[in-house]
Length: 440
Image (cartoon, rainbow, N blue to C red; front, top):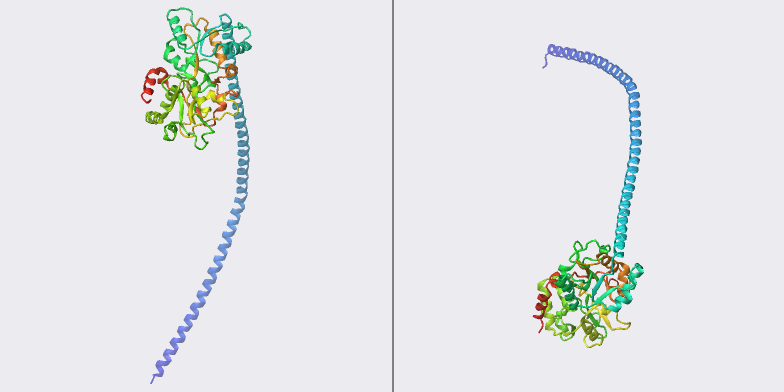
C-alpha cells in the first residue's frame, strides 16, 4: 500500500518541475527571437554596406574596362599599320633584289657582248685558222664555212682546211715540235686527240656556249676543258623487226651475253680501236669490272661476227643476215623510211648509251691565229654552228638542237649519254689488248 503522504509529496514535485520547464522554454524562446532580430539587423547593415561599396566599384570597373578596350583597339590599329609597313618593306626589298639581279644579269650580258665583240675585232686582224680535220673536205667547203660566213660576212670566201686522220695528226706533232707553221685547230676523234695530242692543246674554259652541253661533251671536265665535242657517234644495239619482235628484243647491254643470241650478233671488231671498241670501253666504268667481265665473256661466247666497220655491221642487220647488232646511232637516224631497223633502247640499268667515237675540236697552244680559231670554235658550238653540222648528215653534240638527225630528239625520256672512259682514251692500246683477250 502506497503511503498517501509520500504520494502527495511526489505529486507536488512533479508540478514544480513542469512549471520550471515551461518557464525555461519561455525564456529561451525570447532569447532566440532577440538573436534572430539581431541577425536580421546585422544582415541588413552588411547588405547596405556592400551595396555602397559595389556602387563605388562598378563605375571604376567600367572605366577600367573602357581603358582596356581602347588599349586593345589602339594595339590592333598599331599592329595593322606595322604589318602593312612590314609587308610594304618586304615587297620593296624583293623589288630591289629583283632589280639588282636584273642589273647583274644585264651587266654580265653586256660584258659577254663586249668580250664577243672584242674577240671578233681581234679575229679580223688575223688570217683564217688552218684546220686539220676528219670530216670530208667537200662538207667543210660547201656547208660549214659558208654557214660561218653567213654569221661573219667579213670572213674570207674560203676557209683553210685539210682532211686527214692518223698521218695528219703525226704531221701536226712534227710541225709543232719543229716550231714550223701548222694547224691552229685540231678537229679529230676524242680518243686520238687525248692519246696523241693532249700536250699540244689549249685549255679554254671560257667558251661562250659551254653550259649548253652535258658534262660528257667536254674533256676532261667543264672546269679545265681542252676538247669540245662537236658531233657524236654513239653506239646502240639495233634489231631487225622482221626477225625479232619488240617483246624479244634486247633489254639492255648485258643481254648481249645471253646464250639465246649465240651466232646472232654482228658488230665492228672490238680490237679495231674504232666505234665498237670505244662503245665497250665506255661501258666498263659504268658496269663495273665484274659485270663488264661477265658481259665480255658471255658476248664473245656467243660467237659474234666481227666486221671492218660499224656501217658494215648495220647493213647486215638491215639485210636480215643477223637479227641484232651494234651500230652507230647516226646510221639509224639517217635510214630511209620503211627500214626494218629499230633501236633496242636499254630498259635495264644502265639506262644510257655510250658516247662512242665522238669528234672533238681544240686549239693549238701555238696557234698563229688564236682569236680567229676561238671565234670559229665558238660559232661551231653555237646552235647555228651545230645546225650546220647537222646539214652535213652528222649528229650534233648539242642535244637540245631541234633537227631531224639530232641525237637529243632521238633519245627516249630517261635515256642519257655515258661519259667517256677517260682511261680508255688515254691508254687505248691497253684497252684494245685487254679486249683482244676475250676474242676467240
